[in-house]
Structures are given as C-alpha cells and as structure tokens.
Length: 347
Image 1 (tube, helix red, strand yellow):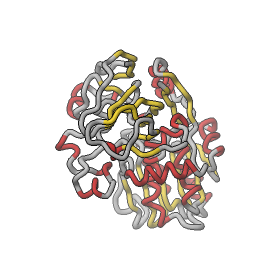
Image 2: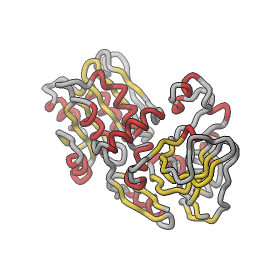
Image 3: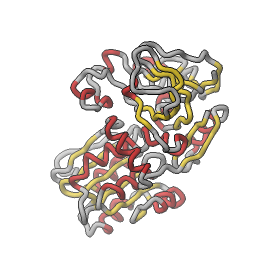
Image 4: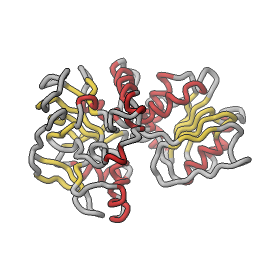
C-alpha cells in the first residue's frame, strides 16, 4: 500500500510503498478516508537527529495524527464495531488503566511515556496511508453521516481548541472578551467554538489582513493585526480592561508576550501553539490573579462533543484537499503559509 513517510532526518516526506498491516488482538484495521496535515508534523520533522532520537520517534515514520476511515478488519476480541463502520480516530493514545485514562483523558496518561505509547503519526504509524492500525477500539469515535474529509481535522484542530476553551468557560460569560492569536488551522475553528459555547466577544489576531479575512468569515467580532500595537488595540476594544481569556495558537516569543500583556485581571492565558516561545511571568509582569496554562489535545468525550458541534452546523473546517500522491506538496504549502484553514489528504 502507499504511505506518506518521513524517512530521513532533515528530509522532506515522501510517498512510499509498504506492506498492508494486519490487526493483532484488540486492534482495528481502518481503510483511511481522510488524514489531516498539521504544524505538529512540521515540528517533528524539524528536530535534529539528537532531539528526534531523544523523543523516541522511529524512522521511517508514517505521518498523520488526524485520521478517519471505515473499519476494514477487526482483531481478535474486538466487540461493538462492524466492518464498514465510519469512524474518527482519537489520537492521544494512553494506557487505558491510569486514573486519567479511566476518565477518558488519555491525552494526560501518566503511563504513556514509560510504556512507550505514542500517538499515530507522532510515533505509531499514522493515517497518511491507504490503511492504518488503531491500537484499541476505544480510540475510535463514530462519525455517522459526517463527511470524513470535511471533518477529520476536528480530531486535533477542533479537539485541541475545544479542550482549551472549555476549561476557561467560567470566565467567558456575557460582557467578557476572548482573544484568539493565530487564525489558521486551529485558530479559525477556535473562533467558531467560542461563538458556539460562550457569550464572549471574540477578537482575532494575525499578521496580515488576508489571514484575518477567514477569521471574519467564521465569526470574529473584531480583527487586529498582530504587531507591536496589538495590545493597545485590544485594550481600546475592552475599555482598558484587557481580555478575560487569551488563546495563543502560535506560541512564538512575540505572540506569547502579546498574550500575557493583553490579559485582564483574573484572566486565563492559554498557550496552545508550539512556536518555541517562552512566557516570562512574575509579580508585576502579568495582571493579578491571571493564570497561564499549557494544555495538550483533549479527552475522548470532548472529541464526541466537538463532532456534535459539527453535526449541528455550529463548527466547520475550511479545507484544501490533496491526494496521497500530492502529500509532499501539502507540506510544502503548509511551510509556505499558503494553506487556508487545514490541508486534508484523501487516499
């Protein structure tokens, strides 16, 4: 079968022929219907050989941690699934036994690192192939009548912002303000989630008006160019108070500085992006009682909730389609910043 793999440190991903896998006991073989392209893949492929090895990633690595498919074959002992079922893959795999996993929060599994459990596409073979193995039926969520291509990105680009926003909902009642920094793959979904589940006024930041156009299309109340004047503009829009919650989907040094400076008293500052920046906080450098969080992905139950928002028409993903053979071009477009919304590979 064909697969898009990262084969050598410092190389570009390439389409290769590999053997079609077979499911072992408890596993499920999916025929992949869609796979999402993410900046996290770029991050992994940017690591030095020393960093890559230390992280435990294998070579070659089949990419793709956003996946959807139909059940092709069931391993021994798998119940409650049928061949042909349309499913989405819950990506942050855990041990299934620890306290967090028992609550469906496998994104915060306390045993995964010690046991060498890694997400598909970020250690385990991913979804950018004609077929993929899912390690357990509990990591599959029914898609029903949802279009897999249109909605596969919700398994990360929807779930990650939903998890971040849900934690801050008590601070986002009527008369409050939420700021979204970075309006691309995750950010444009975050804006829709905020409009769907909160009463906050949404201010979106990005570096060009072209990028902010998508933010306006999906419901941002205000858009602001992300530059040295952004904090002053946010203060103007909030009568000098600042934002009650700031969600940074870039995570670079300048955007984190903006996020911290724009926070109101008792605000949440949530750094989601993996742009390599560091927050500098201390007495006097951030508003009183402001909290800073670094979340990771989301829980299985939250993925189900995100898919329900999609089913009701409240959340959607702007996508650009690529075939599996065109997969390398999708990553070129991602690196160049020309993807509008999310790139999706359709085997």
